[in-house]
Image (cartoon, rainbow, N blue to C red; front, top):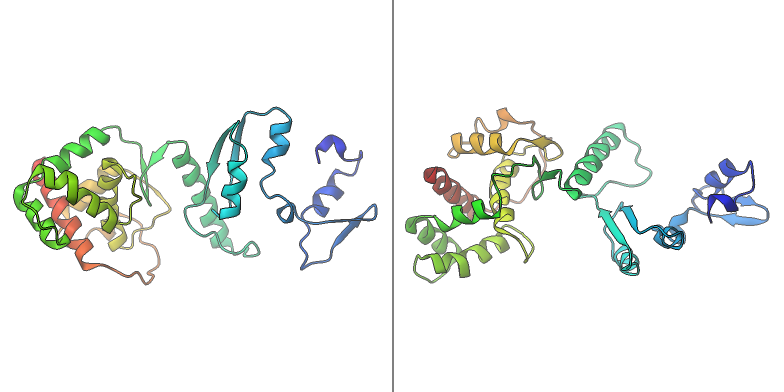
Length: 260
């Protein structure tokens, strides 16, 4: 239904009726039952496509399979999809802190979708210095000692060489750190430093200066004591920590630091 299909003076009635949930009192208008649009089509892209729109921004609340199938039906138009990077909580959760957190999260996820900030799980100002070539060079320049240490931790039975780094070490690092299979050198570089923020329980939903993160991590690589004092710490939650991950990231960061 388009706005021109709504009888004059009835817009508010239709908006209220179309937001109705079955757990509350149902809304009847003109002998018809109206429910929230999610029960029919919670991504009515087709309505916009039928109107001739070719560029559509879709804001998801959850990254579910049905939604992906819906998106795949509209291959002939340009769709920018913004997906929340973490669970937003129940739709009836109106806790003020949760609402404010979700507003910040939505802003940052949108900025990342439009490449106005970067990062894997965290959010950083775009810093063009740390491009794919720069990050590749840092991994390529790791010392043989570092490569051998990483191979031992990852149980890679190969000699310390550039070929070993490219063919075995980097793919295995991406797997251990939980990156998707198509990750880039830049993704891996950022992820390694993000692990230090995670270890120190640093608030994820905030925009950071990546240069500052590198400086603080390099200064405190052997101690967690001062890292948290430079950033906002979130409430402590139970996180399963992998000792090998910490050893791997510490080793690589120290090597990159020594390259400078």
